[in-house]
Amino acid sequence: MSTVALSKASSYDRMMQLFGGMWFMLLALGVAIKIGSSANDPWPSLLSSFCLAVFYVLLALLIITRSPAKAQAEGLLPRIAAFVGTYMPWTIAFFGKTDQALPNLASTACVLIGMVMMLVTIRHLGRSFSLVPQARNVVQTGPYRWIKHPLYLAEEIAVLGVVLRNPTPLTAVLLVLHIGVQVCRILYEEDLLRRNCPEYSSYEESRWRVIPYVW
Image (cartoon, rainbow, N blue to C red; front, side):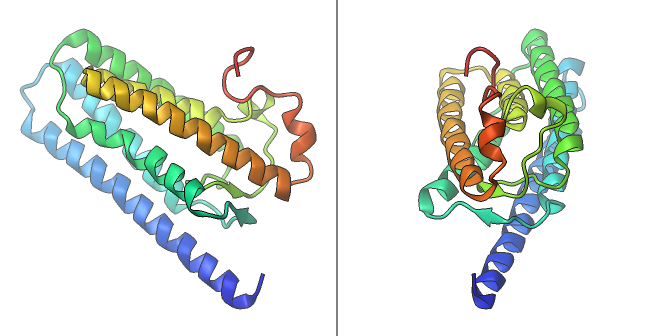
């Protein structure tokens, strides 16, 4: 790759880091403002909102601090899948929320489980977190010993938590669409890793993608 191309790729990556970090920080701020204006809401609702705000901040920090990539997926479709998969589901938080205790407690549980799983995964993944499919290195420790994409699983559990805050047919449809987009992202990412990390082929032969004994 030429020096000009490398410079453009680096500038694009920095721009996406800034955009992604600011987006999730703004979402966290929006949820925090709602918490402040809804201080009299039932405590399960407030707890659900607080956990979601913390999760947004965590996502922002992960995006801002990620390391440079060895290579990234080419073409428009992988980028579209990445942006839709990353940004679309979290806007569900602004659709409104239920005041019922059970859905909010279930939402809190899902967001917390997703957050803990993400933190455990990031401990082994390091700064290799990315939005657009990118190749950095093949991590084989922690949850990566059993499945190839624990971060996607953690994110989907957290997205389920957001949907449970506002359980409607529309949010259910968005959840199904998001799962489809995530499957596309996984396939794009695997193809990129096969082409740029020779050790990935032997690694993937002995791991499930997301759910052991299912896929």
